[in-house]
Image 1: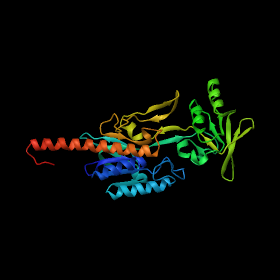
Image 2: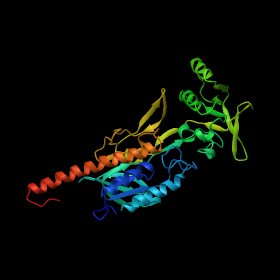
Image 3: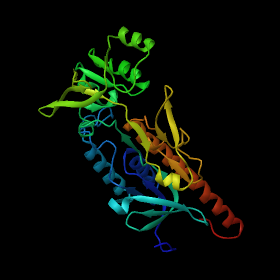
Image 4: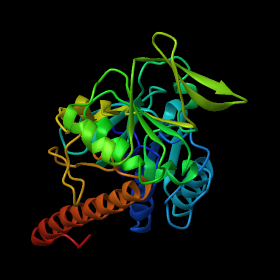
Length: 329
């Protein structure tokens, strides 16, 4: 219902991943009324394990989120999932705060918004590739490099960043190949790659070869093939920014090495504050290259900033009431 009876929360957190839950935990411990809207589509769902997250290395992503939800709920925060946890849009209310519309047609009011909706990895269009994403089709060496160390690794070249990827993955294996798929390295690039023992294989990749549910290589146009145990790709990082763009905050292009590799929402790197008063962002929606631990830290920083903002507003209100002869609140 779109009226005064719609439930009010100090903060509505849109997104139930590491950033959103870390922010919600901090706010709930600060005795704020908090609602977490979790659509249930975490970015790392295809991965079997987490890596590089201190204290949770090797844990299941689903188990980590379940523990996080339980901790957040233990401090009195509310968590909604499914359609009820899917934020469709948000509107700024004339008297301050926001009205958030959810997928089940319900609405909630929020004094402040923390948007931690993450991003979508848009993968290259190759048959069979998406099914192996997070298993042996990989992106981040800090997440998966150790698990494929010393194995033959192929990098699918789709832009200038592919050379950087090949050089980076060379840290984990001496057997790295750059596949000149839809982008071809310059002579200077080839010299840099050769210096590190990275072979360049020409030819557009047309498919993957798999044996006993394990990647063994790729096929190339013309019938040739190249062997590998891991295929490195460069997804396009597309921010899940519907709530923010609906409020009038557009996304910006994320550019690396002269190549647009995705979109993100601008926010203050220290606090997560966006250009919209009362709205903060944390995690991959604003920092696409951030890893899990960093996303969680951003959620905490944003939560502290939000609570500070609420305290300032409440103090001003109390002062006005005090001067008017009312009692302190």
